[in-house]
Amino acid sequence: MDERDHDYDLRQLALLEAQLSQFESGQIQLAYLIRGLDALLNCLRTVDQGWKGTFKSEWWTLEQVYAVALDRKTNPLSPENLPMVNGAVQALKRLVAEQRQKLELHNI
Image: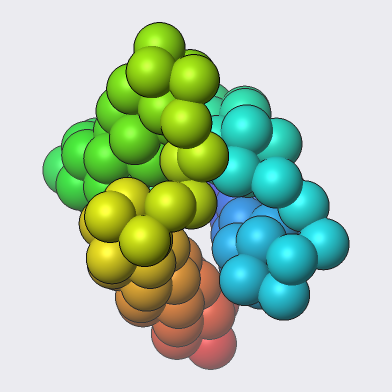
């Protein structure tokens, strides 16, 4: 593994964490989070495809909730959607933290 790619991925994971935190604090909207997570995921160079697939599955939950809300002209963060959104966000945060820790340990 190229050290530059490794460091690059650590930076991308930090950006993923930041976006998730910004969403939780209300600084960014769900649509922005969805786009940002997808873009950052596609930039990762060294993480394995299994991890990316698991991340994408949780991301897909956010995408589906948002798409259905748009179609129905409802709030994607309605009380009925909030448990799914919050569950996916928490899962994404765990995945990112685990991957970041794995990369940091690999660098020691």
